[in-house]
Length: 235
Image 1 (cartoon, rainbow, N blue to C red):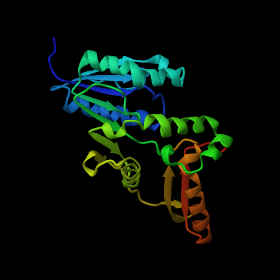
Image 2 (image 1 turned 180 degrees about the vertical axis):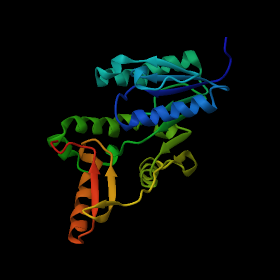
Image 3 (image 1 turned 90 degrees about the vertical axis):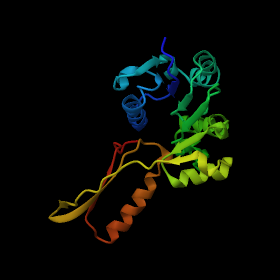
Image 4 (image 1 turned 60 degrees about the vertical axis):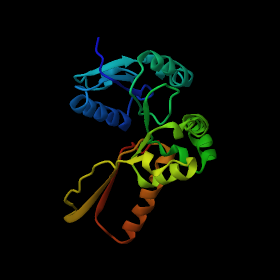
């Protein structure tokens, strides 16, 4: 029997988009740097959407895509049963919520800015599925956030929001901005043009309007540029 301490990573809600990349990169790090010291279990929707890595045991939860009821059951009931059985050293939730688990240490990756979207009634009218997701974030997923030893976020502004809203101490907030590279300007119509890319799904809270307003300003200044959006334009 392997007596190494256990790290559990839970990400059963994810099935597409940038969150898959984040989870996969986290598993890559765990495999390379910690799999020799720890046992690692990854709780996922389906393992086929991730890279199979040495030292990572995938456990699938295919019903997590069926309904929110399954996802909430796993998060706040079944995971507690698993934690009693496994007795993990660390439970790392990659999906914004703090599961009701028994563990020595716990951490959560909080990434979804839907929580602080200020016009929920617009969501109800235009994207009702997001409105009900907003209700879950506001009333369910943030419950117990203060119980985490560490809360991982990408932006300082998001850290400030969580600190003000939930009284999170500075030493619990870990800010890791995503890496980026600056590229040389490319010619557009024989002029050097800067390219801006905004990789996001077509959801209201993604703030596409900010880029579109900037576009109007740049047009008036007659600057050469391209703005690339990862939507079809028909949404």
